[in-house]
Length: 334
Image (tube, rainbow, N blue to C red; front, side):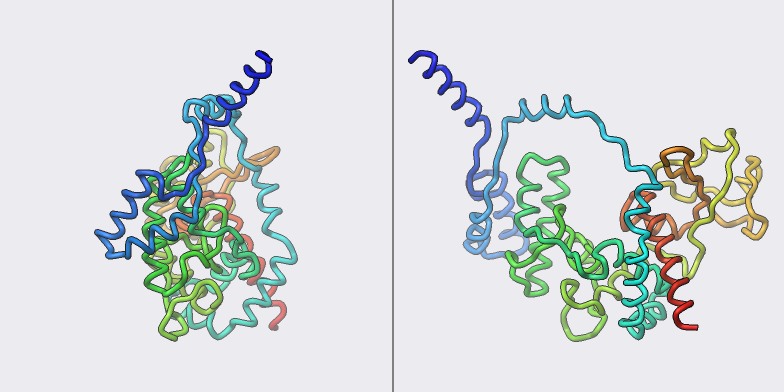
């Protein structure tokens, strides 16, 4: 009997280390709701109602820390394996089809923003397979749990939740109806809420911005995103380059912003193609592979691609996919 009692107490102590309650029961959520009412004039009763539908599980933070210490660091996926996920014949063919189906819109976006068609198409291909995989996670629930649960970057997600509520109101979209990725990205281009508010455009001029079901608005919004991040009109993106062991240190595995010009690198002894002007700013990256890393010379527009996703592998996959889609499109139409 005593052993059964001890076992019961042990099980009870393990279950009370975490509690699951409606989000409105937590002080941090209440403070957020009050802020939205005060700063943005939301209806408090309406916010309390929708927040009450989301349950938060607050775990024992001391146990969470112990788990985190034991968790080994995972190595990033090798570039040769990573690109294989995106540079597929199916994605290329579907990209050509999307290009043909939306030709007039893509041409207009290219003319308006000076961003190449193939870049817009490649981004849509990587993000949602041209609108076919936009995500099934309820975005409001995702953001609430990340903003007030046991997630890192809680402050970031609180700001995104604020933007999400404002975005929903501005575009008359029911908060609980929106679905997206596991991290809160939405629509054809997988914009987070703050990007939706800052970069989405009504490209079909119907009086509303719809990135969930309207590829026209999505195309214009992606082009506007890159334009606002200072895309250099039809500028070069990247070239492969061989670096000596002495110069390999200049190639970063992380995002590398072009800061030094070609003349600077030539003075360092790097062999830069003669057609690149001395004043052009360059950077160098390394893409880790299973055997030998690839090294690339990158221009400003490659850095702009990393503003969409900060992973060099993502930017390079988008660039290479765009080139393959463009090549296939031109072959099919000549």
